[in-house]
Length: 240
Image (cartoon, rainbow, N blue to C red; front, side, top):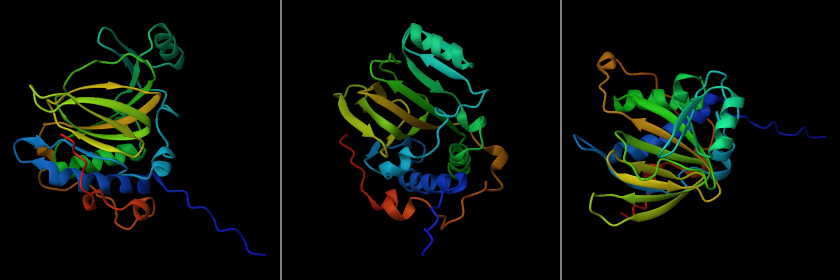
């Protein structure tokens, strides 16, 4: 009787390596010296089934992980599950899992670390969880270049690529990647449920690491790479 083939469960390092490698291939060609990042959208950059299977801090939150509940008119930062649930019940809002790269040794922390070394600018990792109808920040722009990965569900984005330009719309679904340059005004809406990750590339220098590279993932790790290919082999659907 043949024994069943054991199922390979990817390690945190393998998960991070897959995501990092593809994000680098998307970001590097679209970083403009002295002027930041280009606006670009990559549908199904990652296999949907694979990306939705990854462990997230929204499922298993570190006891010290802060969660901010934010909208245009109110901001609360909570730590305990009871306080988070009470604040959400009083005013349903997007839950922001702040600086998760600094509170965990999970795959997202490795991705932020490796991107920091590759881009030579600090990268901050945050996750946003929303249900349909949740209040949010409304239309705004950010002071960083955002590398956005839709982890679960979907998100409707309204974008104004230039200050006087017409509104553009797109929906990110699990596995999609959106590069959102600093200063691009945007607003979001959650059709049903959404978790998206933002890797915020700041403009702070990395003088302390100028002489030596940070650790990089080892090529050839197992994971989702063989199933979906590199982002660099695909042309972005820009629509902008």
